[in-house]
Amino acid sequence: MINQMMTVVQKRTIAKDTVEMVLQGSTISFVEPGQFVHIRIGTGFSHMLRRPISIANVDGQEQTITVIFKVIGQGTEELQNVSIGSSLDVLLGCGTSYPVQGLELRRALLIGGGIGVPPLYYLAKELRKKGVQVTSILGFQSKENVFYEEEFKNLGACHIVTDDGSYGWHGNVNTVIDSEQIPFDYFFSCGPLGMLRAVSTKLIGQPGYISIEERMGCGIGACYACVVPAKDGKGFRKICKDGPVFPAGEVVL
Ligand code: FES
Image 1 (cartoon, rainbow, N blue to C red):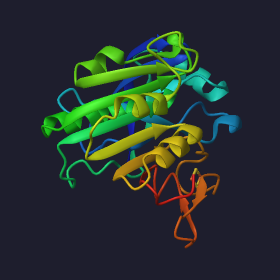
Image 2: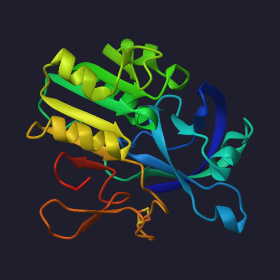
Image 3: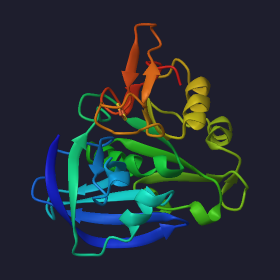
């Protein structure tokens, strides 16, 4: 993990309350899929804590990372309002990553929900570089929340599903898993706890990795807001330090 000042070089709204921001720094190419950045927002006491934000892409040539976040409160509102050209204090390379290099696989199934979708895009790109066939299932609340459909379609088959049926499949990610019976060697999932629980139950016994991003506080192992019990009964795991990526079945969701 390293700390550096990064410049905001691009910013746009890509779906309802969802912002994509490109940050340029000096050393970014070590950042792996699944890791997150920890961005300091403001200087007042109420914002002393940094915000953990998902990484959707890393461009080693441009020395940029693309982050995507949902505007859900004062901190993320403030981040949304940061001007292009401003500097942000960023901790890079936080948490564990999806073990792309260490796995032997030909077919990957990526299952994302809402703001859990961005890390899967960087993962999908890295998997494609290895020649892995990628199929994605991306769940959103509604049509207005959908983002990155084209980006994922450029990397392989992509199924969009919405809770209210206003776009794509009607239902949740398990609706598509049940119906399509997509063959895969490993699955990789990121999203809200309820979705991860449902996916893990559905795909129990299958090799895969999940990433939990929902319950983070300080993001650096200091506040214990993010602990989850280990499934083997041997203590707890901190999502921000031992995760956010865990082998499927390692923690109680
Ligand atoms: Fe504070 Fe993990 S978020 S210990």
